[in-house]
Length: 390
Ligand code: TGC
Ligand code: FAD
Image (tube, rainbow, N blue to C red; front, side, top):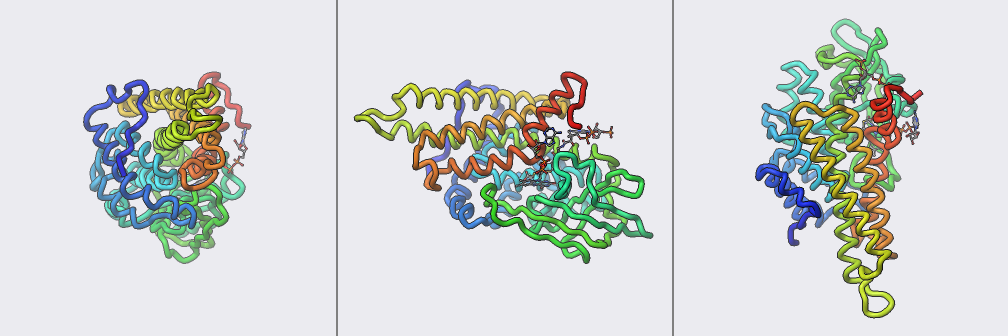
């Protein structure tokens, strides 16, 4: 299969360094050679392609922007370009990387003890261990501050009780980063290992979205973990939110990849498909208008991602700027997928083409890591000074 040529209407490549283009090319080749030949089958069967995980580790994609512990030390822009390519393949694969990197390795790296880092970061980086992140609960999604999960200190242990829901990688994870309220009503993070008595997982079935990704519930019933499994470096909701900044950033780039895949499929189709005589549908103004909307929004999304990435590399990205990146880019990717599906007519609904899979995936991406509307409210609070959540 020839390598994907990319989508670069504004010559944004001229702003990228050779290292950045190399990181993107590595991920592009991996997706073209390893993921695309199998993804429709895995999506149809509702399975995650677990066999790809060690290779993703070897390529340095786990914890890519961290340093030490075998991590690649990529810049944020390099990491973003990697997630863009991975999500061009499938949002499920990018989800796996986002969770492993931004939601599991990042909190251990940033808030963990040396012993926790030594124990978990090398195998997580290599893909020999898998992690998950438990913040959302059945009754608390957009407002995790209301969580019911409790951690009570008893001697040299913590006893955890509660339920987490919609947890990516939950049942395949060796370690779960679980956020729970302590007796002082403050939220803290804990490492819960697979197999701990009182810790159970169950998978969510019947998903029409992110079918090639594992989504689970976590149930903790008098689940006793050693006190040294507390992440000591942070207290309060700031802890999980700092992790979300990392993952939301990768999603903002990743969504461009899904949009690129849909645009590319629609453009190629429109140039081949003929109706009303011998002219391809690409020659009609209404079809061109849709393609023009897509390439314009993809180009704007690329500029937004690159600017937030450059700010992040300088340590200057504000969380609300990352919210704009996630909100805008997932929104335009979903709309791109819908317009692309339209251009393919009936062919748009079958998995001979990637469009409907991306469209369905993007419905989850639109909701997780802060819904589209929650990000509007975050930006609204930043510009007006008034929080409008409650
Ligand atoms: P609020 O009172 O505003 O803040 C509490 C504390 O947190 C601080 N903070 C942040 N710190 C760093 N980064 C951010 N983005 C932060 N946002 C807030 C804040 O300064 C405060 O600190 P302190 O020290 O004063 O205590 O919190 P709130 O309860 O009013 O909530 C605000 C709101 C709605 C924006 C927030 O709750 C929110 O973002 N909700 C969305 C929930 C969400 O995104 N959940 C995601 C779950 S994980 C997931 O979906 C993974 S998908 C995985 C995959 O890719 O497959
Ligand atoms: P709700 O919060 O109930 O929102 C429902 C609707 O109400 C939305 O439209 C929302 O925008 C709107 N709404 C809510 N509050 C307001 C308000 N104040 N003003 C205006 N509108 C509002 N969570 C994890 O912790 N870890 C994971 O790994 C993880 N993976 C996920 C994987 C998948 C496939 C999915 C679908 C979800 C995952 N989540 C995960 C959960 C995800 O973060 C939540 O679904 C998300 O935060 C929204 O919560 P909710 O589904 O409870 O929706």
